[in-house]
Image 1: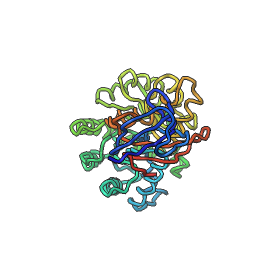
Image 2: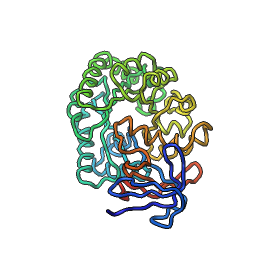
Image 3: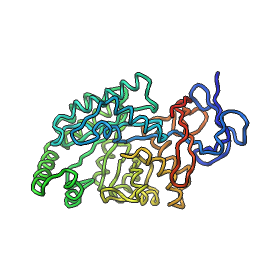
Length: 378
């Protein structure tokens, strides 16, 4: 049995930091030894942390659609995405694929199919650096979202589904004025055009959302998929999520909703860019406020892969009560458990040897090596 030894590392364990060595064999951690060692690859005092686990990133879609109306080759987009994911220390990634057509993209199915097929091809071909799963982002007001869900839900790489509703005037954009400010320039529409667009979106919500949510939730439970809610803003939203058997509350927008989600036993997920920037891009609650209140379980890179690692090293600097192992758990152990991946997420004997060598450079740590199941991938 061939062994790999990573020695003289600052190892971040679930509850502590030690200096020592990690021994890997057959893709798993077989021993953790404290103290200096002359054997193996010398990490020269750099951090050794578990591979990061990312549950919600839109980054693949951003590579596939780099500009409005421009759609890139899906395999090339996946390759670029995978390189950046692994280079950011992420060894397990749930690629968010939006399903459900809307007024902007009236036929979403070919685009979702292209992305899911690319991930399956890359996974089957063995050329991906990180392990990729699919997270179906189910836009409930869409007339065809249930059909799309049935197309992809039973795929072996589909492991998570989120039920979301971006209708103006609720959840993420409870204030229509905030919605108009956010999208007016981005969408390039006049005031009258934007008002017509808002009215059309609200009509779709009234017609489709409730029935689509019921159908998707029921089918997800039949298939054993983990479920997430999205942008819960009120106690009523959280109560609905709890009744639906949701496991993860993604991006609650208010302290009230986050507190209710915590009390209901949901894992609370917020964006790492929110932590790095110190505020939400859409004016909702700060993730750091939830950390200080003990109401944050998981961080997601959302739209900047490196933000995960950056947020982990920033949190202990900004929040005195947070240690590095606690911050690291939000991007390793906690998301792994929430997704049902109990074989990874911490440096412990018997766990997968998904590991990252990190050099601390103040608030901007740098990734120097990445191993997935004991194999060097970056």
